[in-house]
Image (cartoon, rainbow, N blue to C red):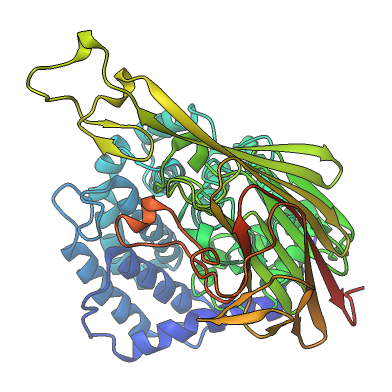
Length: 572
């Protein structure tokens, strides 16, 4: 059967590789000072791929090979006696070195396939890989995705330099089970690590080990990611447990995975996602090597399936709901790890944003709720209940305590009691041994998702404390109907406001059902975002930027907030 190649894709991939490779080849003897080991290996891989690709301007170029050899010399110089690489904040790190060895092994395959002309490069690459092999085989990890990156490096080593001990080590890691949940999310719930580590690693392992179950895991993750693609071409990250939870993540890094599985399975929805991932052009220099190593990527995509609107999805494991229509794309989130762990920590989902709304160019990037309760930070739902289709209740109850004297049998004459953390404060007071008087505060937010936005009902009960609802709009418009209070902030008290960008708008209207009137623009002590003491104690913040509209008051309060999207020319 004749295979039809996507010539436009192949040429675009070659151009993307040429952009960094051509300047390097123009100065083949220039030392790559200050380039980390992962960057050195990645450059070698790209230079050799450009040399091998008929569509690259460096095809057959001796200068490309010379530049690759210069970088290999620099790479060997940062390889320690253990075979691991120096550099970075993770010292003697097997997983960090695995990223580099993965590229080294790919470059070795490309060099060997070229024959005698790249024999010297292949020999140096083999030497570097061999020196790292034992440390990677016996080394450990410290994040979930590291297991699969390390396994991929071991599989690549075995592919080029067969060794059953490498396979045994891979089996030991894989025997733990791939950390993908029932909804198709990896345990870190990170678009970044799914795109750059878990998915490519599992695809490689599936190929080398002939493990269809690993291929199935990737397909499940990609299928779930389809529902997380936002109208601006990024992937939702509010539920992530890693660094990407506080910023947008582009769809482009998912391109090779959607493309490969669309071609191999015929899935039209994956084909649509692959086209969307490449819609702004291909700018990834690593793709050229991938097309040489996996030629299926170069085949023509199957016909894309049309996007289905309306579309709804509730990810129970992340407590994240999405509803998309031709008018609005709305996200509701209540899956923070902070209520359970009582701390802000790397590796936890900490983002306090509980709602987003896209209406074309008018975007409400974040809705957050601050409370002045013992400086414990903004509302992060501890529980989510699905009340009906597209209707959810998010709930959080905070407690703080005042402590009574220690029982007589636990008192010490020297007054030296053990340091203890009581959830918001640490002191040498043996908190767990003391009777406590608790103060509690409960926030409930009911969200009814609609085709044109959302209705919120917010109930704040407990003691009289200040609260502030912050709506952060993406720059580009001005809140019409709200009162400016400085520093890119506005106050909403009575009457509706509209945030308009071009022909698109989001209308906001709040009604107090119980409690005092909303605070006016003179109440700066109320109308502010408070990140909580976990951030402020070290002078930090997780505050948003953009055009921020506040409405607030003194609890207890019950109010409704209607969010309505309007687009002059909705997407068909």
